[in-house]
Image 1 (tube, rainbow, N blue to C red):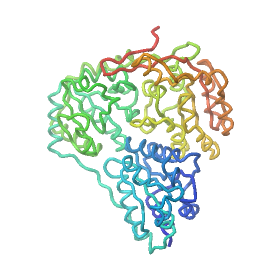
Image 2: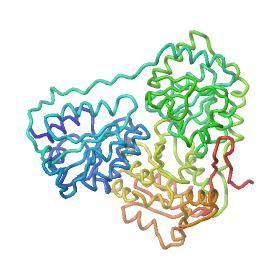
Image 3: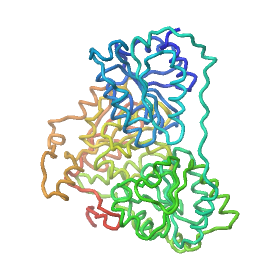
Length: 560
């Protein structure tokens, strides 16, 4: 059979049920067999969107999807999406078309070495030059996507290899088993001893806990050890908002006052499945202080990458949590020093919560999230990209379940939001899917709402329209003392009309100016059963809270 036919059979056996792609001459050899496969294919409007949809599909379901496109500029448009997924440890399979193998050194039309270009932003890249290697390459590719720290893999397929005849029997192909690394028990015992000696230990629940689907186990461990839980941005929703141990986020941007307070008051940090990224830590001198750190991560390279912890443990998050729980139970370890601050935590959380119910017109951006929090239930899924809107989202949105808040974390990719929203909706068509995007962010991949429209996968997009590149303006003004090339008054004065854009893509759309109008529009969007865009006109110059270290986050919100 042809290599392309064998490839598609392998995709099915490895569990691929959904593909996000754009066909083209360089990949049509694969599409010949993809068209009859039990794989749902969604034709996107931009190649980058294929990758973001496959990425968010995994974040929402923990199932691997396929992103597929043609050669040349189609392939290079995959790079941003590969990077977005790679930094956040999200696996998907990317397949790109390529020129014939005998043309590769002749600079033919739409021929680019995408395997080399994408090497830094994928777990591995392949250019398949002999179809006889297909089965081995595919086994390894799916293994690498799933093993250790997950991530995307790219397979570049020259056209003549797609059409090559090989001997292949799908019954002889078996996916490679994936094992999870277990912790060194001596180090687990050392960790428990450190916790026993600590006066005010705190747990950081990172995105690795979500990837391991071990949030309940992490919460149970925190209850057992009597310690508060701070979630990283990637673990938002891992613990219910009103859980007695929920200490919110810590960080210099999407962090929350309660999280920073609890963290700064701690003497030992148990970090599970986190990277200690710069937006979480801020200035390391303040973050580290005199604290001791236990860092647990599935990727050995993450241990000590940012700073050397007191104790590093390489392990799958779930296995480490189970081992810590068993060891702590055997030693009857409980952080008694936390009793007083845990008793005060619910009240502290309430008192330190940022205000959102502003009544001003033009609307405060905070009020948009107040209405979004009211309008949608705990099963709603949200995608988030980058910019000042993303920071407000991380600070202000209330998420009570894991795998419902699906952000571009490490990359901060404008344009991830809307194709990601579609990917999440494909993964869970029964759930409401919502994204709050800035007016500028909406123009990045905004065309992908047409895909949701034509495939009848209704999503809701709320444009937080402040007519500025808000985060860039804030950086210019606060760090450099100037403002340039960041104002976009035409986004509010009628010269740019997002309603017509949305309607042109088959969506319902309306513009709102007051909190009451926004609340009513959100209800109409939920009931419409169609893709819906709400242009919420907001205060243009409001800044968001941020700072250089956890002890110096400045609040810019008006005081009432």
